[in-house]
Structure formats: C-alpha cells, structure tokens
Length: 565
Image 1 (tube, rainbow, N blue to C red):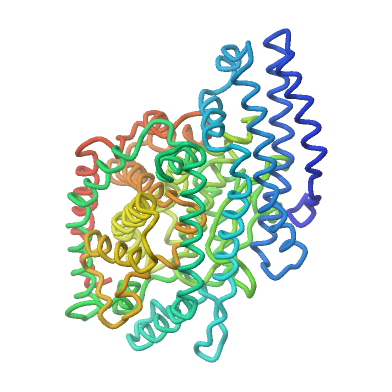
Image 2 (cartoon, rainbow, N blue to C red):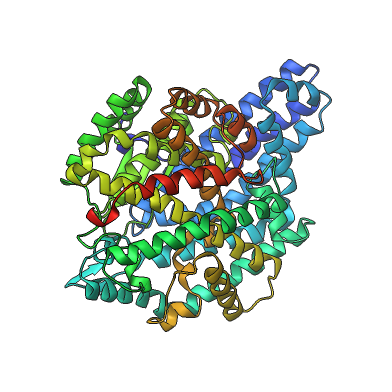
C-alpha cells in the first residue's frame, strides 16, 4: 500500500474515552500482573491508532497548508490533542498506582516507565485550555511562515525557495535576496512578537499551574530529559564557548578570505566559496536515483529501508506553493511507516536532507519491533544522533551527487557542522533567559538575543540591517515557537555524530557502523546517556569531552587548501 492509499479517518474521541475507561478499570481491578500487562499492551495499540491518524493529518496538512479539509483537521487536533492526553495520563496514573506496578516496571523498558511518570508531571486537566491555546498559537506561527509569497526575480517565492539566491556568487544578489527574505519578517514583526509573547506567557502559566518553578523545569520534563538537567547543560554550553567558538571564529575569517572580502556582512555568511557553494549535479530525480544506489551499497539494512520508503511513496521532497517550510521525519505506527518531508531547493542542503531525515527514518524502521508508540523514537537529542551520524556515514558516496565538487562539499559540510554548534547553543541559551524571565517585553527579548549572539557568534555583522541588528534573527527559527528547548538537542547529537565521524573516517574503526546500527535498533528503550554508552561515545556533559574531537576537526580542515576549492 502506498502513502496516498493510507486512509485517514478522524477518530471518535468519545469512543476512545470509552475504550480507555474499560482498560483503566481492568488495571484497577486486575487480579494478576499478567492481566495488567495485557491491558497496558492493549492501551498501546489504542494509542498507536490515534497517533497514526493524527500524524497522517499533520503530514497532509504540511504538504498543502491550503487544503481546507486538513486545515480543519489540524484545528481539530489542536483542540482535542490535550483531551486525548488527559485520557492517556489517566491510564498512566492507574498503572503507577496499581498493586502490580513493580511487575510492570520489570516487564517494560524503564524509559516507558519514566515516560509515564513525566507525562503525569507535565499534564493536568486544569491546563487543557492553556494547552489548546499553546497548540493554536504554534499553528498560527507555522501558517504565517508558510504564507510567505515574496516578489523576487520576477517570481513569487516562499522562504525555502530563496536558498540558491542567498548562496549566489554575486554579492548584490545575496544582499537583495537577504533583504527581500527578511522584509517578510519585518513586515510581520508585530504579529510575530505578539504570537511569541502569548506563547511565553501561556507556557509560563501552564508551568506555574502544574507546580513548577518556571517553564524551564517543565520544558525539561516535556523533553523527557531523564538523566541530565540545566546545570549539566550549562557545563556543555561553557565547553562550546571554550573549545568551539575560537575555532569557528577562525573558520569565519578563512571564509572571508576565500570569498575575497576583508570582512563579511550577514548576507555573505551563506557563501562558502568564491566560485560558488557545492551544488548537487542533476535534477531531483537524479538525486533520488543516486540516493537509492547509496543506501543499497551502504548496508543490507539500509537497502531494505530505502526501497521500502520509495516503493511506498513515503517521501515528499520538492518545495511547492502552500507547502509548509522545513523538513522532518515522522512515523505512522499502524502502517509501520516512517515518512520524510522536505523542501528541495537545488542546494547541497538537498543532500543533507536525504541523509539527515533518512537517518531518522532508518532508526525508526529498525525499531518498529517496539510495541509502545511512546518509545519507538528515543528522546530528541538521541534521535538527532541517528540523523546527523548518517550524514557522515554516507561521506564515501558523496561523489555520486557532487562529482568534481565532492572535496568542496565535505569541507563545507564538516566545517558547517562545527560552526552550527555555537548557533544551536545560542538558541537554547536564549530560551533559558526568556523563560526564566517571562515578564520581558518583546524588545527586551530581542536585546537578550543580540547580546548572546555577540557572545556565541562574534563574527556576525548586521551593520547593514537595522532590523537584524536589534536582535530578530530568531524569528525564523521555528523550534523556538513550536518546540521549546528542542534546539540544543541538535548540538548534543552533533558532538556525538562528530565522534562517529572521527571513528569511522579518521580512525577507520569498523565497529563504528555496528555501534550505530545497535543504537538504531534500541530506539527509545534507552535514555540519552545510556545510548551514548551503547554507542561507545563520550558524553557532551563531561568536562573536556569536546576538546579532542574539536581539535581533530580543526586539524583535518587545516590539511585542506580551501583556497583552491
């Protein structure tokens, strides 16, 4: 069955409530641990069916945000998801209060037990109206971003379609494209400020109602951070400042020389090489064909996976009018199907998507054996290890896409991986300050962003953009609006992925792929630090853990004469 044939039917909330009530009563009245275990598995099946329909509606809405039917379904899920969540937490509460709870803990993965505990901490029916409001505000932001139709180069472009212009070798085009793109955000500045202000205040209200000190505490519980806290994250942030920022600042200076500038302005940053950034050869069909070849050759497991994805049309890669921006991978439990969503725009980012989102999809394809939908994927920072590591494990096949520009692509990709870390940490640090001080005005939040931006990204020069100079770059970072505290997960995972890069491509450690395959198979049955241990990697929270891999990257990049690329 192909994706287009997957049937969507809005679940009956009242039927779900009735079926769950039977299972809750079964848990409460169980006269054996076995009977309770059966009830837990039946509830997992029930939850999987609802999640499948919700995800299917979400995918189809993001493919075409102008589709009236799925627009209504998106509104339905914004309203009803907290109501379903109430039912689920009632079930979790029954399980955790049952006389056979110790047997449940011995039977199911401990991350599933932790998940139930954290869900109970982060939800109460008293906050349902606030959760509905939060969901709608997030959707309003996404819809606003997707609505962008900007006149440029005789066309109407969405934000994703600006990619090639922002990387143009003609500086005047880079500047005009950047100005045109940011003009959309400037035009909607008041609206974006209002949306975010409401989101911050709504989330703060939710946190206080649930008994948390602030939304930071609640955010960590929502993110299922089972084995680390904000103090450990601060240790990691300080390591980025100590070991990474000096190297990335140096890389920015080398970039300026490569592209013939004494100093770069904000619109120069996307251009890595004076003769143009590496771009994939061929059209989207060529990229897909070469992608299948790559995964066929990488391993028997990736061959089976990629054929499943394309044979069932579980990818939507091309940018088009009305399509939501960005890229993601999700999972449809009842169909045991991952799904990849992207917006190809003719840049090297198209290949990054093909490897990054495929890394997510490959992981969940390997962990389909897990019956509990809550833990088929691991927590977010662990998910990103799979995606970012796949970007490096596929390095030997990059010539399929880039031909004579392969060395240029690898230099660009590796240096960009390192240069991403300070930005990712900045996004997280910004959110800590915002939610620790929810009374800040929109202008004060912008000032916080700009202060931190100077700390983590000292090379950024917004002197030719009054709008960006006041601290608005974060407007287009969707995670800040719809997935608070998610973004640092990319950086934690990047450190782990770079360790896999070192092992597989520098040290030529054959065990690296086997370790990667193993953490894909375990899915969400292990916590972040347990997955790191399974993968034989060092924790980013260890003092000094970043030093070795960052030094190796700097050394490898220094070996390349980037001026000839």
